[in-house]
Image (cartoon, rainbow, N blue to C red; front, side):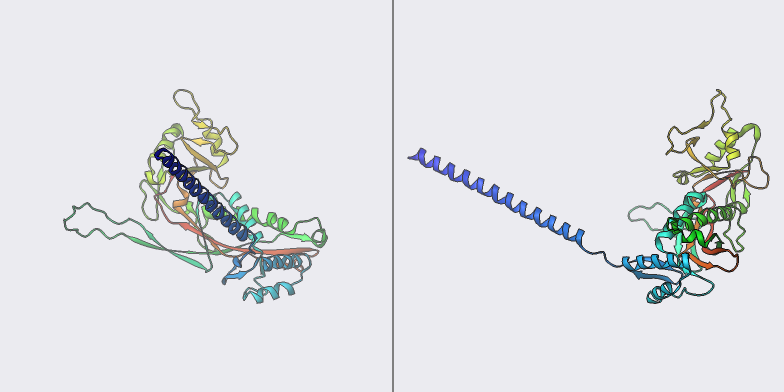
Amino acid sequence: MSSIAKTVDTLVQSFQTYRDENEQKFADLETNIETETKKQELINKPPVERSIRATTEGEFTMTLSQERDYKNAFQSYVKCGEEQALRTLERKSLSTMVNADGGYSVPQTLVAKLEEDLSDVSVIRRLSNVMQVSSSSVDLLLNATGAAVGWAGEQDERGETDTPHMQKLVVPVHEMYAKPRATQKLLDDASINIEQWLSESVSHRLAEVENHAFLYGDGDKKPTGILTYPMAEDSEWGTFSKVSFDENNIIDNLVDMFAGIEGQYLSNAVWMMSRSTLAHIRKVKDQDGRHIWQPSLDATSPSMLLGYPVELCDDMPTLGTEEAASIIFGNFERAYQVVDRQGINVLRDPYSSKPYIEFYTTKRVGGDVINFDALIMLK
């Protein structure tokens, strides 16, 4: 009987184990079904309202359907000059931008396209730090020297450290404009994508103008440019460090520029030069007769010079120019601040250039140097 009892006990335990395992499987299955149901509910849930467009007065909330209505109203305004729909939508959105001089804020989809084109064409913008504001300027509090740091034991007294030198920098935004024009016949053509035409007509010209200002702007109704600041052997606030150009020792010049940048700025550092300067650099050989230029074998990868990418900017001076630096090396993101005013305006003008219709497009942008140690010049 003892053996029979043991067998029965074994069967009972096996059945209990089997039952527990199956109950756990069913519980896990129910949990997975509930999770998938919640995911599907989130997918099918209608989109929530969110802020997707901004004016110079700040952000306001607009639903996706309202944005589509605004886009259609804007196209009617561009094609036919119909303003009533835009006025109504902007009044509902509590926007105060409707005026004879300012025109109308362009749809967010067009703003995104314009900003993308600006980044593609404007080299300085693409490499620098970009900030968007809703005011006419931004105040930046910069740490020019950094706080002093010391060592101490667990129970040692902590003495006072040197106070960091703080530098306040006000970066105003300035208005730049473009006036593309088209005939009414072109605008009436149904096959013409108005947003694409306006973006292509405006973006490249605006990008060229702002990129030149980021280098040479004097701060008067335009950004303050990088190459407008003085240069010396050692950098300090308001002055860039430089390496003197020697035509017979160009390799030594480039090595000195690399060595003149602090290690913290080498991450994301690039060389910037004009196309003509690059043509000269590509012919330079080392003592073993090898070119120092390292061409890229992939269209998506940049060419390298001494291990760092090369960015072409035709606004840069040619090599050996005495008036300004011909090559810049360093971290532009740490060195230069670009400030964009939210919103781009378009004013339709059918009167000034008959039979053409002009589209007076305005954008506000500013820029200035925020770190003079992050770049070094060859002059």
